[in-house]
Image (tube, rainbow, N blue to C red; front, side):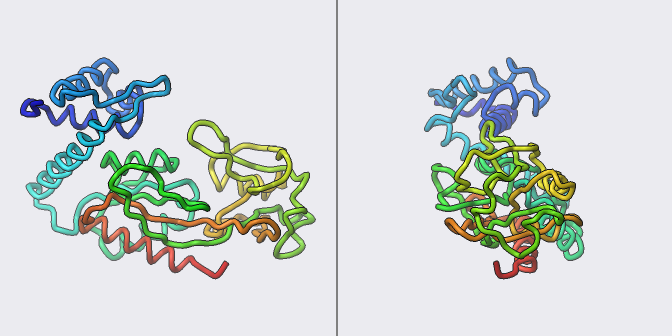
Length: 307
């Protein structure tokens, strides 16, 4: 194997493919043709002397050799980017931090943490992107994200099986809640029994691809009636306010509930706990990313109240 002629372009293309899991989506993100992406991957595979991708009907998956090359590619590209920042004369605390977040984290926690960081360290720029948990984990592995806010539910397994394991820190752990219209009969108290949820109409997200059905109370012992589908949590809450149905919400979203929505606890059945975690690759964080991690931990602590 000979990597002496491998280009930075090829490494960046490979990283994009590893994150997006298809050549087509990587090409679209980079503004390349799919054939150009294929040529860059082929050049890397010739240099490695082994296949780096397993071609599948639903996309591509890294081989064992691919994982090794990805880890090294991420290190090289990070060093090149750090060199560019140093040559540009940026101070130690300047720079851009790339943060990924799952849907409900963007309504309350994320803007609060970014606003606090802007006040304390205005030289730091935060670039964010929303995504599903599997997509964000792939982006962390590919080195296109520095940090990711992820949601975890029992039995709280690792987010992937790759080595080394991601470094994760729990920012909060709270009970799942139920959002009901203020005019709904269930809104009379502060909690409901799970048996009262039978026969209700639900507002939920889709369950296609790597997304799970979100919005229906877990463990409901009947086939749920899905009245409306929406991925965005605030859209779900506004549909609840309009009397269109019920939905589940993380406790952290309670402050974002619009008028006309009651947030209730549910009794009966297993307790539904949800963790908000901050994940990253297991290596020292650059100063800007460490500052953002501190801001996220502080914001999560300020929002936390006993469940």
